[in-house]
Image 1 (cartoon, one colour):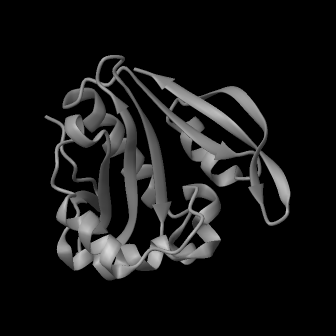
Image 2 (image 1 turned 45 degrees about the vertical axis):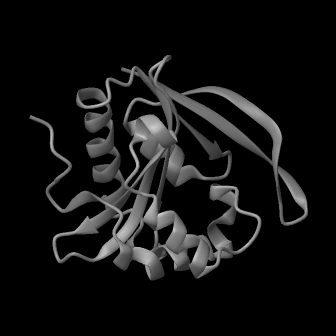
Length: 173
């Protein structure tokens, strides 16, 4: 039986109490590059988002889960997006909020839990992600979980006055 609980973390649904946590992440310009964000989000917009977060992945085509430790502290988020039921695929995004908490195995465990959930509960055949050519930590993380680079999108993202390349990675289950 697959669970969303790991050794050090677990994945949980969004709660109204997560508003400030999500607001802080969505308005952190240092991570806008990986999320594709262009403008800040108001608390009003995030509150509306949270009010609709209970909707089914088959309806809204996405699922956002909070990565939490067993002291119930939110550490980050992991997302499925562009869920395509017909073709049995989805994109994956992950973020550990605090830089001091990154590269400590949190993302590794969260990604493993999500992959298992996708296989057993959603019957997803393939997962994909988009990672900046410069993001060595994420490339290493996803490669560890059998994601393969299948393409390089040249000059894909305009960041801080210059264009950056982005890899497309894919995992077939």
